[in-house]
Structures are given as C-alpha cells and as structure tokens.
Image (cartoon, rainbow, N blue to C red; front, side, top):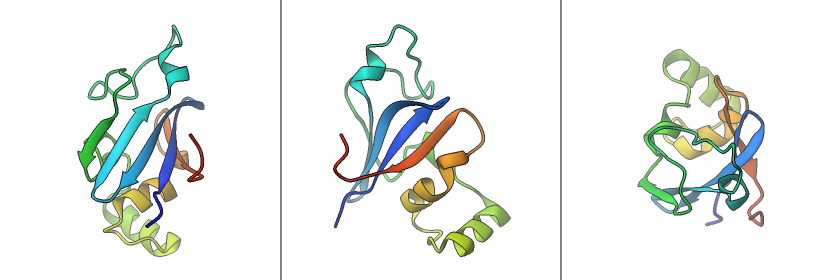
Length: 111
C-alpha cells in the first residue's frame, strides 16, 4: 500500500508532514520550520520538537479538523471518501479548513 502524506501548513507556511503508516499516523515538523526564530507549534498538544508524533489513527488535533454531523455526510458523499477513512477525509477536506492550519495532499516522493 502506498503511503499517503499531507503537507501541513500554518498561515500558508509549510511546517510539517503528516503520513499514514498502516494503523499509525506520524506528524513531523520540518527542520526548516524548527530552525526559524518565529516558529510556533500547530497545537499546544504538539510542541515544537524534531522527533515525530506517532499515534494510532489521527492525532486528536487533526481529528478535530474533520467535518462532523451533516457536513461529514455531505463531504463524504460529494468527495467519495468513506466516513471511516479519517486520513482520506483529512487530505480531502482540510486544504481550506477553518483556522490557520491547512493539510494539502503531498506526493509520495516528497521529503
């Protein structure tokens, strides 16, 4: 199975990569972001650090970006992404989500 990845941006700036690894999801801050003097974390639950954050399924921060209720129903049907595919929904719906964080699908060969 090909690894699905997303580039995580904060206010339009690339800050990290989120990747699906079998049952786990890994988020890693980009070294370029960590080296910036104005770098801030995407969430208080994910402070800046070079080590990746690994969780079973989506980390709660990313899960909270997903549509819910009637919007989940519409998004799932319109985008043809299963409601059970949280990572697929993240990539399909969070390129323009509320707030400063965006998740853009990344090519498998990137980073």
